[in-house]
Image (cartoon, protein in one colour):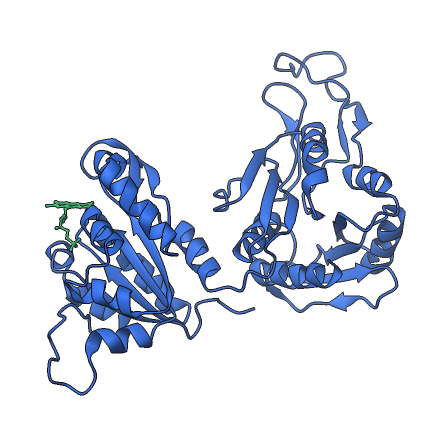
Length: 402
Ligand SMILES: Cc1cc2nc3c(=O)[nH]c(=O)nc-3n(C[C@H](O)[C@H](O)[C@H](O)COP(=O)(O)O)c2cc1C
């Protein structure tokens, strides 16, 4: 699956909010992913950022005047509305939210919204009091009832100096919503439990045993599944990655905590994908104070084995077809043989093996090259792909098994 935006005709409606400058980034990113972006600005929006900025970034003239081409063969708002795969309004002011909620067509943008059959995504952004006002809340509820995607604004410092809800999301979060709006919801109704990242096994309050996993593969899987309509529960070890949008994130630290979180939620899942790099061992005891270099025996580490969460799930599952169980194995030697052994020994439906000797696959890389093993099937060797693309290919495989 290439970018969901490739070749899509996106109209970006910008209204007169202080966050108008932020969507310059969105235009760049959308164009970078292959979308054809036409910007439509309200009169008020042009008070904040000049149309020239958006024309330069989108490579298309900016539209704004309902009557600009009066008498021409094609009526601008009808043409725009027809040639559109996705209509995004960001930032959406309280004023425009109110206009759209009542079906007004008093400028080009509002007229396009009424005339289009494309999905409309609205990103309200305003001062918290304006947002909380019952009139605005009623209007937003009306927009949702009309079938528009209304994206809840973020929380944080606002341009007016106050702090609270009302912020326009940054592009990575907005991208998730927009990508989902353009993606077939072929995993709707499925519940995916994904584990990601490393675990940390404390030695004392400042030291721990861990590994080089960053969580990139698991987070990509969680995001991709969400984008395709699944409910996703992500159990994550310590990771510096931003939380994926729309995903239920449970943060854990140790293998024992990860086990507890997985066992508390696995029964709700239709598939469990264990991509976390769980430490095989932990220090027998974590000291309550910082260990001294000079302490007797400080150079010796006594370890105990951590539970094998995947194996335990395989045993609990027995012969049940669901939930589907998927393991990940990072191997540096004889990876296919080792993978086949784990697939059978842990009663898994799929095992994703990667050869960590490659510099462009496995830990910390943005790309991955994996082989998917299944009982009684030929190994599926995927090419070197982005982790996002690898995630989609694995989800395609799961979809066929469900
Ligand atoms: C400096 C300034 C910042 C503003 N920021 C916002 C905002 O973030 N959100 C909002 O709903 N309105 C904001 N407004 C008010 C809108 O610009 C005003 O309601 C305008 O009529 C909106 O027109 P439009 O919806 O057609 O773009 C702001 C006004 C000013 C003067």
